[in-house]
Length: 358
Image (cartoon, rainbow, N blue to C red; front, side):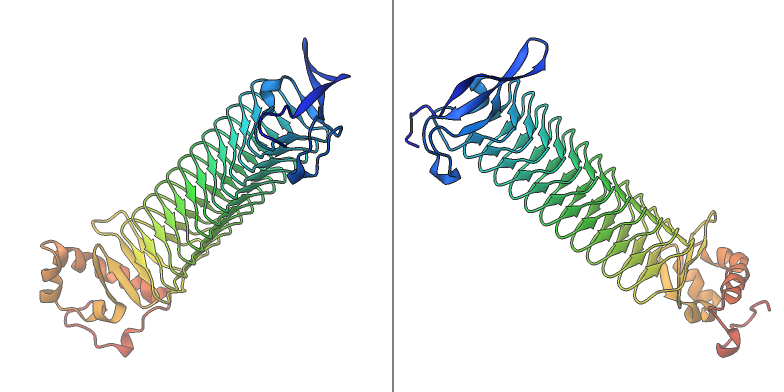
């Protein structure tokens, strides 16, 4: 097609009523659009007015039974086809494609090399661009953005101010919303929820019925699944796993090869790391929170092996904090009673400190 030539004409009598007093009209090519294999005389889809499809520039085309209406615009080299709908103030441009039974509406923009297809819907002020794909029964709406090489599929929904980008994939019945970001090679699937200001990135995966929210971060090769929750300012990263009914919250960190599972709760300023796999022991509601993970115990900001804690004398404890010795004299028997009951410690294999109550 040469620049400046009129691209199409309306086919008289071939119209569809879309609302009282409003119709869309079939178009017919006047010139060849070689890039699409369109020849003069080929029938296109339906538009409400010439403002819906650029007439004299680009290779944009509407064909099949697709409809473009309202103030919507299809321009550049974009294609809208199949039974797709583009309406409202939506714009499809660049090399973007909207097809199948997809619908782009509101003030949404689909551009670049993006594709929206299947029964997918993009609406509101949403943006889908780059090489992104939105398909299946997926929905992207609100102020959400999907871009880069990201995919949103299945029954997934991305909305609010959420962003999904890079090579990320959101699928199944997953929801990403609020100000959440999912990016890198991250996957969010199943019935998972990522929201608030949460970030899921790297090669991380969140799936099952898991929830990541607040200011939480899940990244690296971490996995959060089952009915697990990660929230607050918590971080889960490295090769860590959080699953079952476990909760990680507050300023907690779970990382390395650590696993937190079952009904475990990691919270406050606790850190679980290394190769920890046993369900952590948590003691809260006291001056300094206590977390025991495998052979390590964290009290407040002090992290040592269980054996070291057992062996510390009064002078060593006193140096940790002005109130540490008083705390330790009250809670050491309680804490070690819990550890002993969980089978994490056998005092017969360690030298008991002087004055320790049996």
